[in-house]
Structure formats: structure tokens, C-alpha cells
Amino acid sequence: MLSKETIIKIHKKLENGKMINESALDFAISCQKRTKDWLEQLSYLIRAILIDHVFEDGNKRVSLALMIGVLEDLKLAYDPQKLEENLIKTLKGNITDIRKIKGLIKDAIR
Image 1 (cartoon, rainbow, N blue to C red):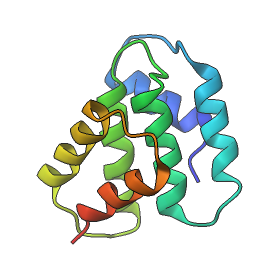
Image 2: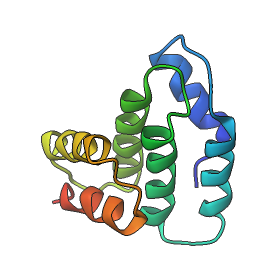
Image 3: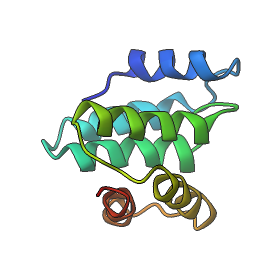
Image 4: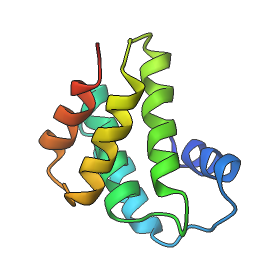
């Protein structure tokens, strides 16, 4: 489970912008506590950051960094191009359904 502080640190490494929707991140963090499914936990964070625009700038970069970090921590092989394509698909399609976001992340895992 990723903490709010960790996500903010990742953002600061990638971008100089500020947080503009803290409540969306707080909600995603609280949703993580309801499940032990790492993929569902990650999906809540991705939805908050990418769709609810937690940060002024860098939401796509932070989302991608989170996904890559989690997959690498779990030592799971993934297709980086597919991961990025599915991230864009989530954003452009304004996908908010956690099951669909989980499926798109899972689709990039080899």
C-alpha cells in the first residue's frame, strides 16, 4: 500500500506543480485500506491521480511511475509500451470503473 507522503515525493521528483485535489488522493488512500488486492489498491490511486487530477501538472507521469514502481517491486514483467498506452486509454476514455482500470493494468503484465 502506497502512502500519501510517498506519492507526493514521487510527484516532487517528476514535477514542480502543486496538489490541487487532495481530497481525491485521500479518498484513494482510504479505499486502499478496504482491500488486500494490490491491483485494486493501485487502480484506486491511478483513478484519483489521472482522472480526478490530484496535481496541477504531472498526473500522467506520476501514474506511470506508480504503476512501474509497484510492478517492479512485485518483480512482475510488464510491457512498458502497453502500460503507457493503457494509461492514455484510461485518461482519454475518462475510465472511472476500478474493474476496468484493473483490467487495463493487468493487460500490460506479461
